Length: 269
Image 1 (tube, one colour):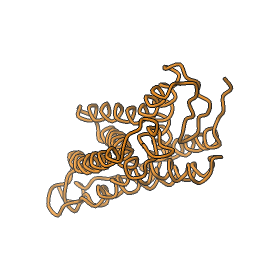
Image 2: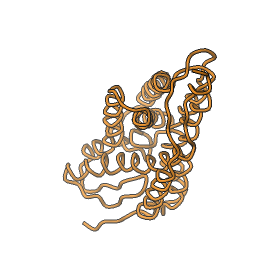
Image 3: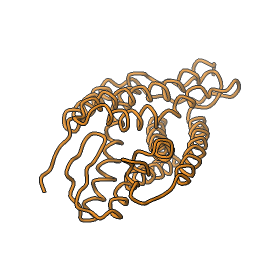
Image 4: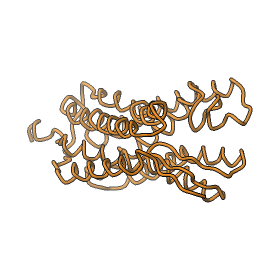
């Protein structure tokens, strides 16, 4: 078997389609599956659902903290599920999609810890405007968040690289496939998220803090993954075939996400 036939075949159109599909689905899992669901479960009222935020009212400060933490915890739960399913026998495309899901969710969860520690904002932030600001925690807590967030993110990058190696192999023959799976997916999901975030009525702050931070920032580990080709090793035969239907589905879901939740939806008590 020659080297050419052993190289992984990853079609850009399909990667872009998956990026456009997973961005809104995984975002809604965090916002609706995490924040909104916990708000309702604890007896609160979901006043507003936007593309990248949920406004929960009517709860005690302690329950507000639970709602804030529910988003990242939803990311962790889905990451663990996708990771465990990815270790079962499956075809190449299925393993790739599960890899995207668990890596994306794990990066976002770890990134929230790091972002909140650095900025004081966000679901786990203790600064003014942070969801945990009412707990009276000191500067030491932000240092702990920075340390945990940075260390866990670095470990996740290594784990993600090793997991992708098991799917597509190693060596120069995997370079193009690796960059498409990592860089093209990252750009597709990240740019789409920022464009949707621009529709938010709360303005540029939400776009930068939520859409850009959680996508282009939270998923930035994919940049390193795309360059981790290695000079030696053997590629594996795996294919993600061209699918215009996948691209159409991704465009449709991202557009619906933008039109429905981009401007935010408000709910009366």
